[in-house]
Amino acid sequence: MYGTLEEVLKVIAMTKRPLEILDQVLNGQPVIISLKGGHEIRGVLQGYDVHLNLVLDRAEEEVDGAVVKRGTLIVRGDNVIYISPSVE
Image (cartoon, rainbow, N blue to C red; front, side, top):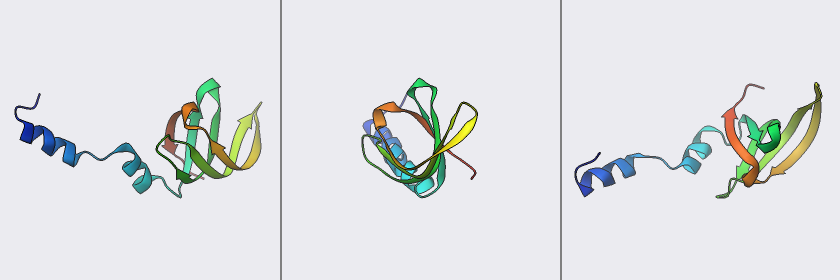
């Protein structure tokens, strides 16, 4: 635990916000998006908002062992479980 308010504020200032990390690390890069219901989509992250709504280009999903190309998708943030870097 941190002792003083100054120490707490210093830790907060050093901590990056999740959307800042997402912007620096993943924007414009291939990602894997895990969704509720067991779906997983791969694509290139083009944008997002504070609700974690995502815009993916070249999106594809594996359905019954076959890769289905979805093109450009908007994924509602409520359905996102995690976002991970991917290798295309």
